[in-house]
Image (cartoon, rainbow, N blue to C red; front, side, top):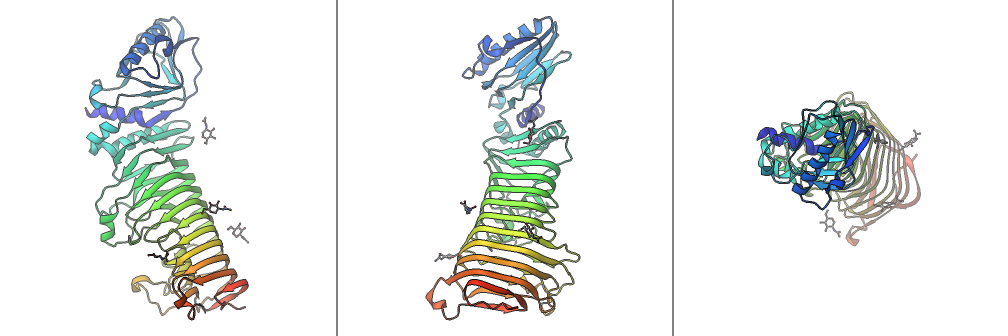
Length: 489
Ligand SMILES: *[C@@H]1O[C@H](CO)[C@@H](O)[C@H](O)[C@H]1NC(C)=O
Ligand SMILES: *[C@@H]1O[C@H](CO)[C@@H](O)[C@H](O)[C@H]1NC(C)=O
Ligand SMILES: *[C@@H]1O[C@H](CO)[C@@H](O)[C@H](O)[C@H]1NC(C)=O
Ligand SMILES: *[C@@H]1O[C@H](CO)[C@@H](O)[C@H](O)[C@H]1NC(C)=O
């Protein structure tokens, strides 16, 4: 039974694309009365009739499965044959959904054959959902077996998670793989264990891969409630890219992660697009997307509402573009926190543009820790065309960032900030502190430019107190300035 289930898994996940030369003689299963509307037993009879003709042919003969989806019961293509049989699958084969209808140890079995080629670019869909739901212990094994097949395939290959809901334990999909693009296509919903366990750094991790696409319209549900109640840092990241070169995450929903929803670490060339991220506004450390040690990352067209930063950019991040993000609730879009650890790398060339931020604590923020010895720099950072609504601190540079009094805040931050641009920023604030620029007295901020800042208090009671706060900041203000600016040369 276990073996049968494993084979069903593996054949379901692996979609194999091979180009093979066709044999001389073609035997199309539809000529033997297989059809896309046919029942599994009718189609199986037709496939076996066609196979008999192929097998009896003295020479190269090809069984052809054309485009279209064919239901197929358990089937055994047996030899020996007179010539050289081939199977060309252009369409999709669907296994019976019910586990009990497969009694052999394989769904599609080839036996006693020499020089068999099975090819064609089609799909072998094992419809494993029912089997998985009956055998929960085997699921990580099933995913990893399927990944091994996909990873070792020489060419593009896709691992498909079909529709349905699957409980999934922490998984690492590691490379290096054979050349070609790998896709992880999630059509259904993956559900993480609901324990508050911190054992794993990630729930679903992709590591050391060249060309990986994660997509599919499905859902990753991190089931974070138990983890949040422990209020610990570094709870498992739901979707983690580590050492990825050319990655893409598109068209997915993530919810209720235990820790960060998506994290990109030590990677180059990553695109995150059309993603929807949701967690309660009081869930701790549930950042939407965190980037660190990575370059050329583009985040666009995403909607994020969580209990922490919508997007956060950590040390070692270069050439990051964040565009068309809708953020809130949460803590806004943050560079940092920086300077907490020894020998941190710099952060540079960051652009945040055309975003809307609503109902958040901070809007656009740069935060660094005081009282540490790190001497990194953050520079060439632009926030441009941003709409803020009902935000507590719309624009904030905070070099005295020290949540829960974890630092010696009498020592100034040693992180140097310069070339920081806030351009065309409009919206409303629910506190008087519209613009806060609290820089380090040891290394003052330089070249902070405020250009067309148009903020209003949300309540008229805030009007008299509505203001900017500056310390240790050099820069200039141009164009519209509401509130009155406090930066100077
Ligand atoms: C493999 O995928 C890449 C990227 O999508 C594509 O450019 C290439 O044509 C694909 N190759 C084959 C053989 O399908
Ligand atoms: C700005 O972002 C919104 C989504 O927040 C998007 O609909 C719009 O097309 C974007 N505009 C530009 C110029 O990219
Ligand atoms: C500043 O960063 C942007 C990317 O946001 C980049 O295009 C630009 O070249 C950088 N400017 C300098 C002077 O490096
Ligand atoms: C402002 O945002 C808070 C959440 O931070 C929300 O509870 C409140 O209803 C919002 N108020 C307005 C006027 O939008």
